[in-house]
Length: 185
Image 1 (cartoon, one colour):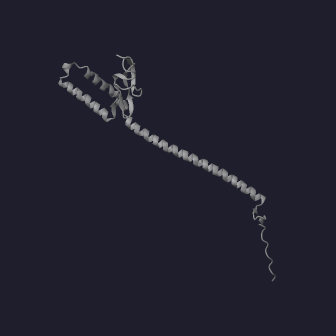
Image 2: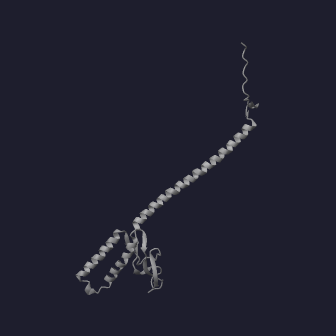
Image 3: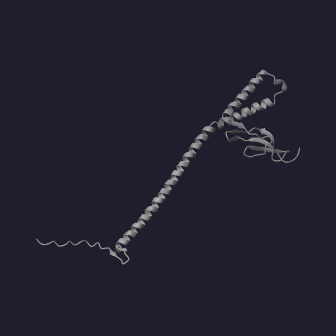
């Protein structure tokens, strides 16, 4: 038998510089640089996708909140058209009672009509209707509608022509008012 010759190892030489740094071959350096560039591009795309997803998630959460609020408002204000149609009836009761001659105020049937008016008002209040206070208040276009100006303290409501009402926190009918123009009586 002949002695075995040592097998040649593949040439995987890495040249070390005198300072101990490893020198890579030119082809490997280019591959590493390409991989680094690709990794940077993929990271940028991933960050952009994450940011887009986070925006979409925030938009969806806001949409859900807005939809829930609209649903609650719809429930609250679904009857507003019906209430608006009942307000003139309430106005008519008020006008009728204010124009009664004194001798009719003692009639018993009139007490029944006043009871009907009070029940109507109680039903409206149970639904969240409340009158807007106007007399003696500063004119506020959010709550009042000026129909004319007259002698009186400037910017102050001096007469209520038609009552205004709110449903919960919304004006459903502004108060029609006469506003003082600053001239003294």
